[in-house]
Length: 248
Ligand code: NAI
Image 1 (cartoon, rainbow, N blue to C red):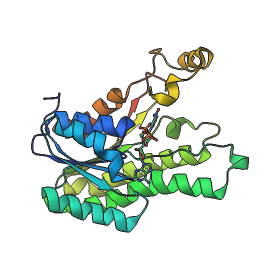
Image 2: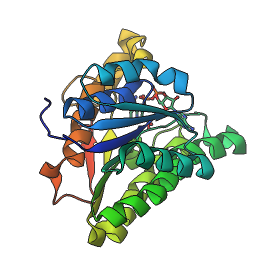
Image 3: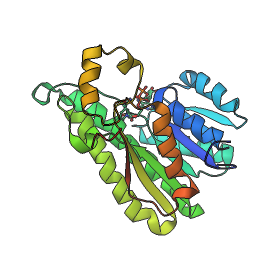
């Protein structure tokens, strides 16, 4: 059993095939939640499914493009049909298409906003219908430190993550009276295959900005999500929890 008790709860995690999304799914599963794990391709979810099931809970893999409203609605229907309720929604799926503002194509702008921001809107809208009937639910959105600070070369990404933060606050205000909480986690630099290959020089430069002098782990992000999704955070809504080693 993990630190938080999710026994009998039903959680949806998007972008759960790998990375932070898989870590979040496993953390919730450790607490006893049954998991609907979503990603673009159901086959990519096999590894997460096996790891979740090894923890003794159910895993339902679902192929969905989070930017497609019809697919999102069908996903929510499938989860309710399989599990009967939805208690926790984690909007984690995200992409980058970096480039300097003056060179950024409309296609790269649209693609990132569609997945990172519209995807959160579509899932929140669809899940809210179910959670309002239940008069309970917790939504956790994955933002980013750069959605607060801005970052050169990421106009589309930073705008999408800043948008996620504002959407989180509005969702909290609109749905709070229905017993639904909505919060965001804003990770900083998180260790990944991408950061593992950075040169020592680049790593040192990043480290100068991080008071804790370390990259975070996927687990660090998952722990923050688990707290916000749990009943231990029952009086917390509309907040952004930074997991960034003290960068801001
Ligand atoms: P990742 O690229 O390893 O995983 C993202 C997952 O989302 C993949 O499995 C991908 O297939 C899925 N996905 C992409 N587009 C999708 C779509 N349209 N529909 C459904 N699924 C889709 O990324 P990572 O690093 O695990 O990031 C997860 C979240 O954390 C993202 O929202 C990212 O912006 C955010 N984040 C990551 C940081 C990092 O240092 N890795 C720092 C701050 C935020």
